[in-house]
Image 1: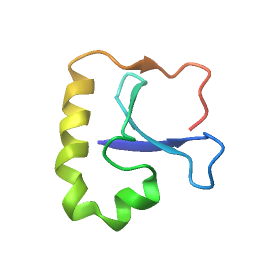
Image 2: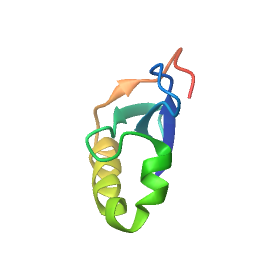
Image 3: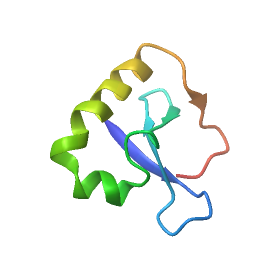
Image 4: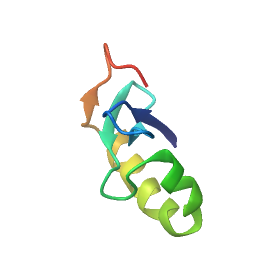
Length: 68
C-alpha cells in the first residue's frame, strides 16, 4: 500500500492511496491526513488496505500532473 498527501490548502494535505500504475483515490473518508492515519494506524489500516485493494482492481484518478 502506498499512501501520499495532496495539497488541499490545509497544513497536512489530504490523504490518498496510490496504485502501482499511478492512479489514486481519496482516503479522506478513512483519515483526513497522513498524520491522522499514522497516529491511528492500528484502527485505520484495515480500511486503508481495503481502499488499496479496490484501487488495484481498477479505477481511481490518473496522477499525471499531480504532485504528491
